[in-house]
Image (cartoon, rainbow, N blue to C red; front, side, top):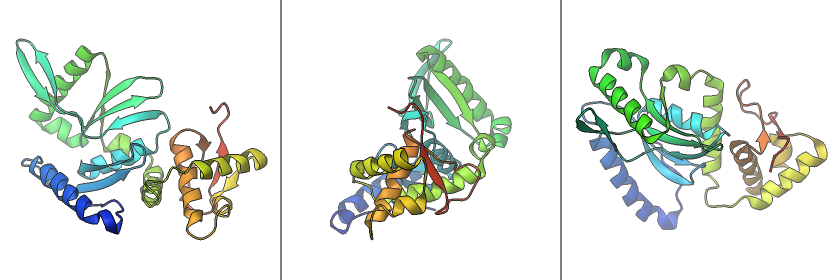
Length: 240
């Protein structure tokens, strides 16, 4: 399965060529493992990525929804680590930088693969050692951590698609208007935020609201209820 980002007609040929190249490279690198490929647009990084498998897709949505994160690399270059007298190359699944400047190296694996796959155990040992040598935090994410809040993942699958539709726009003026609305009223629903614009512009206001949630500017309960026009936003106290 492949998810493609939105493309304008004038640039579809050039982006289509890049898409084929990225997917061909990712497909080849799967080795003997069979998995879906997801071609996605990340609102957090404002660029496209190729994700290798449904678990990486779930992790992608988890990261995009986390306001504590400032930077994310979904396709890090291999790290070289010395274990004993030998150098080993190991590839991480993602590198996360939090707003408090803590860096976390992440491995994404299904839980049963960790217990049954000797190669996965060796990879874990190499990555733990590499993280220690580089003074960063190491974490392993399985389906248990990624899908611990399924409603959140389901909501952000829709939110990312919504935000992808307005890629390339600054949304600054829309954010200013939303801030004024929330400062005046305390909270506002998606329907009320949509009402700040007319026609296609209304979608930009909603995308700006979600971007505010992603950046830690607005609070919105997306963990416990399905996304609807009744979902409300409010400003987070102490925002900068």
